[in-house]
Amino acid sequence: MSQPDARSRASSSMISIHGTSAKAIAITFDDGPNPEFTPQMLNIFSEEGGRATFYMTGDQIERYPDTARLVHAAGHEIGNHSYSHPHLTELEEEAIRAELVRTSDIIRETVGVLPATFRPPYLATDAQVERIAHDLGLAVIGGVNGAARDWDMPGAKHILEASLAVTEPGSILVFHDGHGDRSQTVEAVRELVRALKKEGYSFVTASELLQMD
Ligand SMILES: [Zn+2]
Figure 1 (cartoon, rainbow, N blue to C red):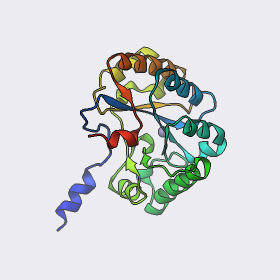
Figure 2: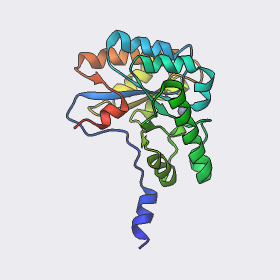
Figure 3: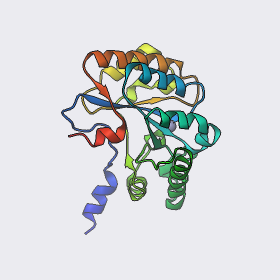
């Protein structure tokens, strides 16, 4: 029967929200580690409480291993964001696998633990990418606040408001701590965390969120 295969190829198992009764969300940062902006994100959580997830590329970890170690030492999750940030859906199976394996190995060598979650660069994913990720023990993580476009520097106010508008219990939010000037993101995330904390939200890692009922 080819029907089930055809259906699974068309559908995505990428997780952008996790059904939970807990008032918790996962705030995530892509494209680090970055020696200037990653520590500023860490400061927000050390001041306000909670944990985040940092989707790092292997090549950035090789450049800034000490920054990756700071993230791990502060109790945050480090996830796999590929080695060189390609469009994985345009690569052959072996090249996709190499991107993910190499980065998981670098994370383990740098901070001592293998990653459990993966964010596809550009959120570009398909059944093959997801099968390979799952083979490697990686849950595929998306996000609900694509309209915030923090990578495009639309202003801290826009980033904040577009993220708040789609936040509900179990939401996964995408931001960036690398690849350019991330000062708007720092400002927006600080305000977001303060506002949501007042509403009773807590901030957990992607892996923690997936385990909540
Ligand atoms: Zn990215």
